[in-house]
Length: 126
Image 1 (tube, rainbow, N blue to C red):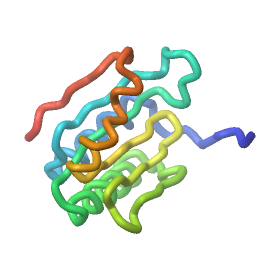
Image 2: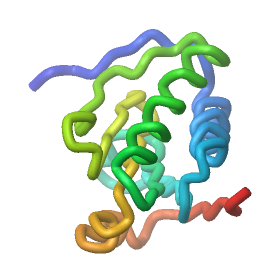
Image 3: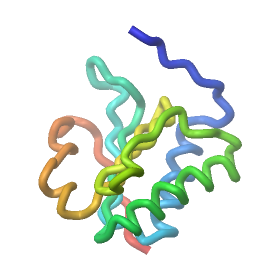
Image 4: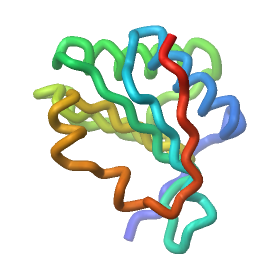
């Protein structure tokens, strides 16, 4: 099993704020952060979810997150997946894993429900 290590250049709360702001800047919808770090077998501190109505916007949100985190915190994404079809892009920042869905696929998969006992933070649309 591979051990996940990354150089920490920011704290988790700063990273969370930067990610949420980047999502809101590109008009991501239904932005939610699940604080899963205290749950048994947690793989990170937070899962962040949002959705958009088109694959173009999903791609734009994910790209903006990567750009803003590098620009403001100097931190690169550890791993990403989903840019090929842009219906569900995942960005792994070790402490925070971001899920950017196309709206219909977020409704279909309902991934957040797997961690229903996690503390949930809802963010206003701007």
